[in-house]
Structure formats: structure tokens, C-alpha cells
Image (cartoon, rainbow, N blue to C red; front, side):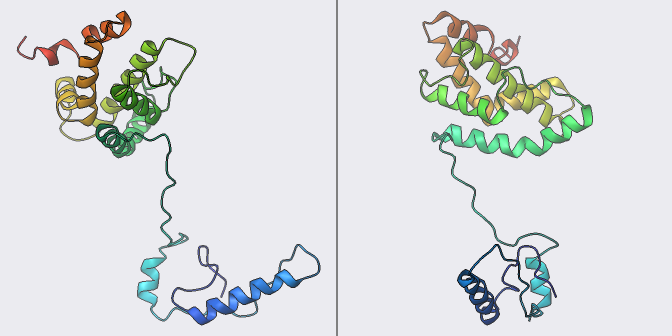
Length: 216
């Protein structure tokens, strides 16, 4: 019986067999020359618990759950962390939307969506945060970044039941999502900024008028 993919030492919990495999592997270090490709002499024994074994190895998949590598550029603020989780949660719906429509309006910023989210989160914490692009003004990159995020969220959520109208989608975006909370904060920051490009964004671009004055 061959060693299955993801089981280089045999079945789980068979310590004695696993030790013999490791000893045989280390013994190859004594060879005078290489490379070596040598079959192991023993067959892999059957699992003592086939049912639990099948659950642990469903098909050709490694049963080991490797932790995600740390992201040194990930946001550390509460809203930044929540935004990253929300973007990731919407990814499957966005993929369905793109497959269904054959197109997307996400992309003018030239940033991956996750990077656009990182920049927005960084700007909320520090308006002097480094801009991810150096070929255009930071205010322009910021606008394109949050517009890409709006498009990503809108396209993703419209694939879920109950979001048939643009007003329902917009209300969810600005009143129920983490991104909406971030955009309201961004609006306040930009409106208080004396730099004209940011002030303009805060007054005219970040949040639509019908969200600011819903009765009108």
C-alpha cells in the first residue's frame, strides 16, 4: 500500500511505524553519493480506526491545519481588523458575481481589494500614512481605493437574497457594514482637513447625499 499524499509517515497514531520510517530516512544521510530515490521496504499498515481515519483524510488532502503566515502590513486598529475580516467574508460572493456577470467594475485604483482596504484603514488612523502608489496624488489614490471597495461590496452583496434594489444595497453598505462605518469616519476626517483635495472628497464623494439626508 503506498504512502498517501499528506501522510509521509503512514497512518496517524502509529508511532512505531513512523519511527521506523524516520530511521530509514535518516540512514540515507550516510550514503556516499546521491541523489537517492529508494522505496521503503514496508507497506503502510491499515488504520486501526478506518472511520475516524476517513474523516481525518477526506480524499487527497493533508489533514494538518497550518496556521496562516503573519501579515506584517495588516491593520492593527479595531476597525481595520474588522474591515479585513469583512472583505475576506465577501470574497466568495464577489467571485460568484464576477463569474455570473463576466465583468467587474473593481480595479481603477490598480490595488488588490485587500490592499485598498489596508490603505483606507491606515488613513483613518494616520492621514500621513504612506500612499501605496507614487504616480498620482495621495487623495486621488484614496478616492480610487474606496470607490473600488464600494464596487466590491456592491457586486458581492447583490448576489445574496434580499438585495434586489440599489437603495437596499446602499443602505446596507453605509448603515450595516464595517466599510460603511469606515466611510462615515473618512467623511468626517476629510471634511475637517484643510487640504482642498481631501475637503472636496469629504463634501462630495465619500458618502452619497441621500445617505446624509435620507428624508430628502
